[in-house]
Amino acid sequence: MARIASVVIPSEKQVETALTYIYGIGPTTSKAILAEAKIAPTTRVKDLTEAEEQKLNDIIATKYSVEGDLKRLVTNNIKRLKDINSYKGLRHKAGLPVNGQRTRTNARTRKGKAIAVGGTQPKAASKT
Image 1 (cartoon, rainbow, N blue to C red):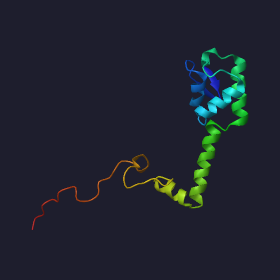
Image 2 (image 1 turned 60 degrees about the vertical axis):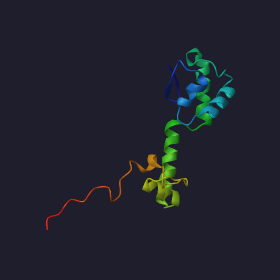
Image 3 (image 1 turned 90 degrees about the vertical axis):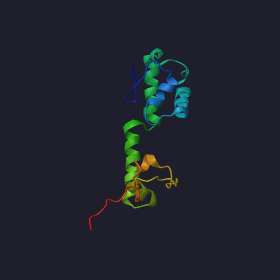
Image 4 (image 1 turned 180 degrees about the horizontal axis):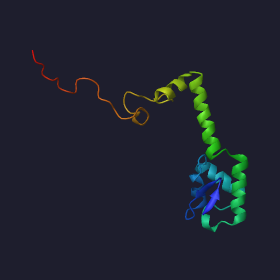
């Protein structure tokens, strides 16, 4: 089990795919890191030497913001938008889509479970 950027990455996968398990590193960034470290993308994580692991750790630590630091940065950015009451901040507060997506239909991930509105239940008979 290799530990890169304080994340245990799967040892059976190719290095290019395994690096994407780190928050903040996607496929493109993974390729760039491997090119800089001069490691073949098809190499399995279990076949990496200690020197290669250390090289990957150094590159990620110096050039990329990942895991906790990146999560903290994103959270602070959202908090700042909420504090200054910008439009995007208000959308975050309301739990609605932020980037202009439609909400009449869809947007269920952001809005949560649909709530039925009016006219669906029969009225109970009242005594007169």
